[in-house]
Length: 447
Image (cartoon, rainbow, N blue to C red; front, side):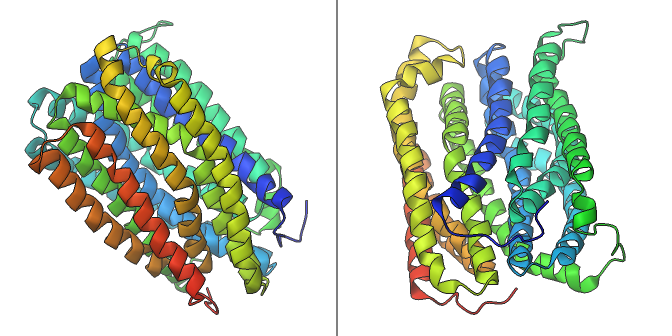
């Protein structure tokens, strides 16, 4: 096991980090698609409800990602400085912060979510089914938050090749239990829509056990002295929260806004909601390379700055953008050449396919924009200036919300126009992040 965690900026180093992250991100997206394919077999209403529940849970999932990204940036900075024991201290404290936020999310779901959803969803059948599902599904949050902490550790310390084991275990468990619990196979109860909730919770728990077993048997707990500094440190908690809080707020605002988007989509009917749910699945799978290169950018920028090599940051970002765009262009071409192949997985009729096709075209262009926008935005995260991330998000989201309200609610245009909001979002993100990084105002930031 290497004791020098300082990174280089070569293409080989970039791909060595990004490709295992891509595989690790692909597996949970397979879980999302598996849930929706099996639920689509129950009917269009269930597929529509899965759109609301999926985005709601995603709100809390990305809050965990915000904590993860802030912690990842700190760990990568310590890796660049080759301070191994401080990495262990950060990871230990990050796990406690994750658990606290997870139980806060459970409390919010039981107290506020039912009132908000009943007030905003027009169809009472959809509202009741969504709420009942979420009151079960939300108990997976502690498993999920502790699970994503491994991202911060393994990505931040250039150990991405170990990411796949936990995600693979989670995916296999989820597929088996989805099939068993939704339809009642292998002697298990037929739980229908709620079966997907129980399957996902058990799968997240399985992934958590497997990845922490890998961390233990590979000796990371000893290398980074996880249990040598078990005394809780107020200064370390403060550092993690100061670094992660803007990112948590940024991601939460982003996905809460997406839930608002889905609520407006629901006003256009169950089919519009079902189509948008399939788009979320396509967006999730097709975007894994963009997010993998974005996570790589966060880690590499922070690591390189930690080594005192600030002059190499901008050339590194441009190199990652070119690779990210190349991967996304292949996906863009496949989506536009074979859109019906992707849509047919969800088992819906010809009318569904004809209405969904123009939305696929719009989403495919948004994927190209995300390929460069997410990389530049995560470069800002890597510099440690997370308040700048939050500011960029707040400005972009304000424009986004105005756009979707005018298009979907005020003008009542088809949902294809609503999905053009992704163009608005990623162009706004990119332009502000790009000009900030080019300005050089991030130089000299200590974390």
